[in-house]
Length: 566
Image (cartoon, rainbow, N blue to C red; front, side, top):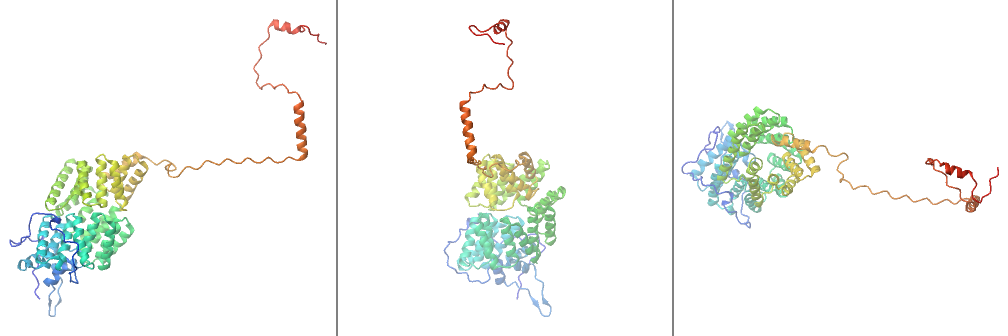
C-alpha cells in the first residue's frame, strides 16, 4: 500500500502552502461561519469519529510491512495520527510532519473533505501550541473548504468539531458551544466532541455542564485523556487531593513523550498552586526532559524559580519561553518581575510587547480581552479594564477568571462595592487560587469589613506565599496593617447571653408556738415603753464652749423653780 510522503520531523514549523493552496485569508473570527441550525437529523454514520482519525482511515497511512523484516517503527505522521486518534497531544515535530503530509495530499485531492478537516484541525493545534496565531485564519479557510466539499449534515462532523476547536482557541466560547452541541445532538457517542465542549463550558463558567461533559468523555474514552480532563475538573473545583491523585495516575500511565510531558506539566502546576515551588520546578524539568518542545513548561518553571529567589535563572527561563512561545501572558509575568526588581524600563518594554502581541492576536480573530484587562487594571487604565470585562460578561464569558478580573478592575476603578459581588463569585467556585483570595481580601479591607478581609488575605499567603512578585508582598503588608483579631473572636459571632433570672424569695418558715408568744409579748412591751433618746453618732462634732453669762445663769435656779436639794 502506498504511504503518503512525510516531512522531515526535525522541521521547526509547518511548511508554507504551495501557490495552489488558497488557505490564507483575512481573519473573520470563529463566528464568521454561521453555526448550523439546532434541529438537524442524525446522519453521521462513521463508527470511528475524530478529526484526525478520519484522515487516517481515508488516506490509508499505514505502516508498510516488508516480508521477513517485521513491522517498521511508526514515522512522525503515524505517531501524530495515533496520538490524536487516542485524544492525546502529538509532539510539535510530529504535528509538523502531519501538516506537511496532508498539504501535499489535498493538492491532488482538493475535494477530500475528511483530509481537509484533518488539516484544518491540525492548523488549529499548531497555532495553539506555537502561539503562531496566523494559522487560525488558515485553519478557518481549510475547514470551510471541507464543509463545501461535504456538508456537516451529510456526515462531515469532523469539520464541525474543528470549527469548535478554532472558536475555543480564539476565546469565542459561545460559538464553540453551538458547534459542539450540534455534533453531540447528532451523535452523542462521538467522543471527540466532548473535549471541545468541556473547554467551551469552562470558558462560559458553566460548571454543571462541564462536569457532565467530562463524565461522559470518561465513559466513552478511557485512559490518559480522560484522566487528564478529570484532573482539570477537580482542580477547577478546588478538590486538590483528588486532582493530584488523578494527575499522578495520568502521568504514570502516559507512554508517548508529548502525552507524558503534558501530564508532568500538570503535576507542576498543581505543586505551584499549593505553594511548593521546589516540587514544581522538579516536575517542569521532568516535562522538558521528556519533550524539549513543551515550551509552556519553560515559563511555568520561571514562575516557580521566582518563588525560590533564583531570580537570574527565572529571567533567563522567561526570556527563552518568550522566544519560543511568544504568548502575551508571559510578557506580563516577566514585566511584573522586572517591576518588582525596580527595573521599570525593562518592565515597560515587556508591557509594550504584550500590547503588540495582543494586537496581532486580535487581527487573527483571537479575543485577548481578559489578559488585557488584567494588565490595564494594575498597570494602565482600570476604567478601560472594566469596559473590556463587561464586554466579556455580556458575551456570557462568566468563568471564575473573568469574575475575579472584573471584581478587581471595579475595585481599582473606585467601585469596590460593585466589585465585591464578582470577587466573591470567583472565590465561591471553590478554586484554590491565591490571587482570587488576595483580590477579595483587599476589596473587603477597602470596605472596612476587616474580619473577612483578614481571613482571605491569610488564605492567599497560606495557599501560595509567592503567588506574585508584586501582589504577595502587598498581601503581607495588608495583613500586618490589619493586625491580630481581637481576643475571643468577633463580638457578633454569637448572640450575647440572656440576663440571669431573679431568684425567688424563700417563704418565711413558721415559728414555733412558744417563740410566737414571746414575740407577741416583746411587741407589747415596745409599744408601752417610752422611746429612748437617739444614740449619739460615733463621731459627734465638738460643742462650742459656753460664755461666762451662760455659765453663771446655769448655776442659778430657774425662775419660779425649787432649789435643788444636795
